[in-house]
Length: 115
Image (cartoon, rainbow, N blue to C red):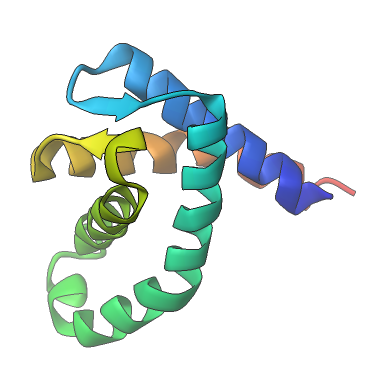
């Protein structure tokens, strides 16, 4: 149940980012929900591989390169979604990854830790 709530909150975060920034487009809530689901699948499969492959640069940047990896997974999700989810430029993807991380820290993580 918490996983579904996390997906809905992530979809709302994607919708909020799309509302605030012009270079980030989501066609609707259903597309945002599907993008959230697809992003969680990409984060489970692709992100660990990227983290291991880029471990030296992640250590050199004190972990800041993880935002670049998150941006790559966002861009991959946008590529898989087609025109329903569009990110214009890598800089917008990095900004969105940072915003998603910040918002998840304060909203989604406390919900998962609550019993």
